[in-house]
Amino acid sequence: MIVNCRGLRTSRQRSDILPIIALLMLSMATGCSQSNPNQGRTSQQSPQAQEAASTPRAQSGKTKVVTTFLPIYLFTKAVAGNIADVEILVPPGTEVHEYQATPENVKAIATTNVLVKNGLGLEVFLENTVKNAQNSKLTEIDASKGIKPLNEISPVVKTTQQEKDHEHTQGNPHVWLDPVLAKQQVTNIRDGLIAADPVNKATYEANAAAYIKELESLNSEFQQTLQKTPSCTFITFHDAFPYLAKRYNLKQVAVVQIPEDQLSPTDVQNAVNAVKKYKVKALFSEPGVDNKLLVSLSKDLKLTLRPLDSLETGETDPQHYFQAMKSNLQTLQTACK
Ligand SMILES: [Zn+2]
Image (cartoon, rainbow, N blue to C red; front, top):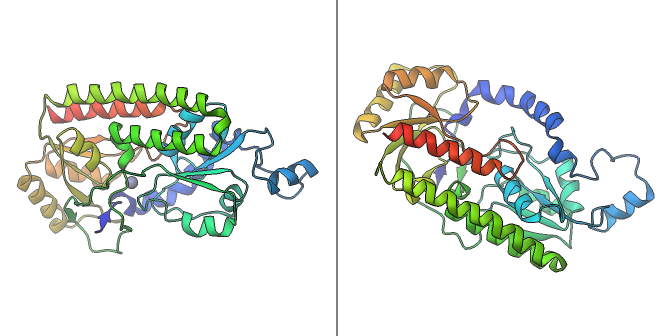
């Protein structure tokens, strides 16, 4: 089973600007760096800091929790509140699908109590990173534990012959984009944190319950809104929405791969054929992606290009999940009319 995951990710323009964005985000992401008590103490460590590094406890005495990327950070932060120190390994603005671990990531895992990941094969970079960190006291939480991955693949419209895309072998990993499965992830994170830090059980339970309540009302909102446009059919450039589609009776019918330089007339024809074949109503890009090829393709397809957020990047406030998802719902409602 193979799932293509990154039609958009092949754009050269985008990958070239990513390091710059990542740098900017790093310097701006105070919410993350503040929660990392060991940051910037690589060479001159105080005796206390050295002690803290050898015993997996943050200096604050709080449980230290390292998360992989944005949605998992948001869910973990929501459950942990201020009880634990929560960090993120993949800085927002950096591509998670092809992420390469840094020495700082190894250090973070070596000195943490808990590591939370999405699982389902998304965090390929973790395998060696965890091994190299040699943290025998590490508790790992797989947020997707018990979730049955979707194995069916949206047909990929190949508009280009280029290097083999990154592939996932454990099913599609984008479960966080379905509020019901997100609830399951929050529950898994809650149970994992309680197991690692039982003293704070009551707080983890209360925080998780509040966030789950919000997820439930988000789910009702999606249900009520999208039942008015059943079987709305859409094409995307990133295979991120099959769980969302399945939950709310939408159809993600194809993932279009975009070449780096330009579309040939055959490329365009292939995409036009797919739109006709599947009677496509909507075409989704992602927020912040400004790609001339997508714009010109949308004109050829006579479909409005709209941004749908996969939440792989964005703000680090746990409420950001609801803001982004509600904006996704508005986009779907408009596009599916
Ligand atoms: Zn993705």
